[in-house]
Length: 195
Image (cartoon, rainbow, N blue to C red; front, side):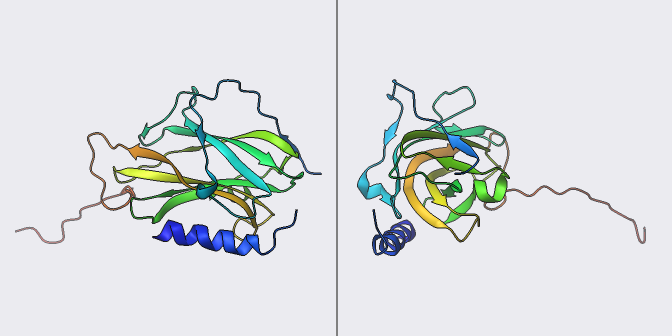
């Protein structure tokens, strides 16, 4: 469906152009225990692939694997990546999609953080986090991405790991009126004519 089309467009766009110093540098991975890491297959990747997402894991702030979330939960994304060259103006982000592939929400570091990031040639670990909003209770997938540039929408896409992680949203004891709730912030009733 939609996600397969997006992947094909990313691959087609960057495979044609394939050819073989910034602020904060992303450190090299040091974790020896990769039992809770999910390996990203070639089939699940798209983009220019000068940086490849090799493995991913999603945890909470206590580094415990995350399969269910509620509003306000901190979701921490860990990426094990391999870069074929130094990349300055690194952008990382995510998109959360529903069961039919519609993008429900997402963000990237270019539009939400003010710092510059770079990644060195070789293998590195990238970690970023976001708070889970109150969305309709169902299973969602996370598409994780790495880009290069200074514009949140127009930049080089190095790698997307398409629909790679599944996560279930829970909304205990509350109804969600649509895709997400947007709370009413004020209400007033005025009597105009009483009988």
